[in-house]
View 1: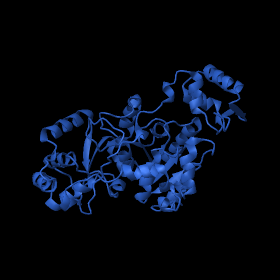
View 2 (view 1 turned 90 degrees about the vertical axis):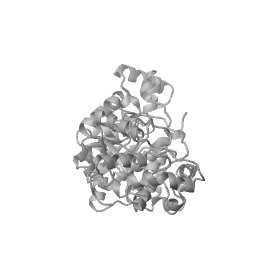
View 3 (view 1 turned 30 degrees about the vertical axis):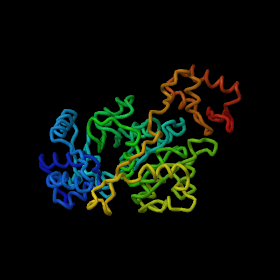
View 4 (view 1 turned 180 degrees about the vertical axis):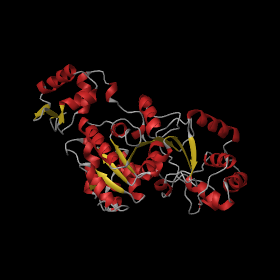
Length: 413
């Protein structure tokens, strides 16, 4: 596709086409290539649908709906970038299912720099959060943009730690509906210093199935994806799977075998992901032209991650939605996830836990963590944290280590 800026009228046609029923990135491209432009494709769509859908009409996004969306975007300072535009992220343009149109808010130049995705558990440990921050700062100092999904836990820690360098938050919903709502302040900070990116209509409220769809953009914007804490059914592994399919490097941070939050990352390492224990591991591997994860083959290994029930669910989740445009759909599958997953429904949030003991428990794991870091992460007074630790100590559930560090006793409920 040639690189050119669309006229306002052409942009309206592009948005109408991609917002129409059953039109995803690949079908969009097939229609553009066949009819020579979005306007002509929109004119041909009703007849094409009638022929292929046995008379059932397909909903085409109305012009006034798109005009309202563009007006709302202008009021928010949101800009639309089509894939043919020179400002479209070059790494994202390379993937098979690149969004035809992105909406962006913030520092547009951020899209032209190399990114590294940092993703991981929403229910992150204090140790995991601290390492994510250290990794984000270190990679930022080396010139990399930190890309993540604005989720609680590892994502939010990575964004906050890279505000001074550069960060991109990829939204599952529209620009006017960032999730979770508690990150309103963080969203404003990213809009001022970094970039917010979405492929969804501006007022779109994210649903469970929109989050895996978003993950292909996170990995697509990045030269490498680093997974910091992930359970075996974590959505972060979807991002790793996309990175693998896109030929990008995959890194994983090792964790305690006793911590369920590290099972997914430890599995990735067994399957061939590159170990990441410091920012230099990523920097050096990328400078050498790649890591040790054999990009594109990680999940092809016998007994690999695609053998478990999670990836059976993954395959079902991304089973192609029937496009029904027979002449176009041949060898042109669309990208439209069709099955919801509870992985991305509202989850527990440690900041919502009012009992100090419960909050401290949610942030601890088998890996030792400094009490000062625990106090800072928990957002509690030192008195409350020390009281909670004393209760856990008396119950025999706490281990105390040198350098004023603590951890949960392994193999106890």
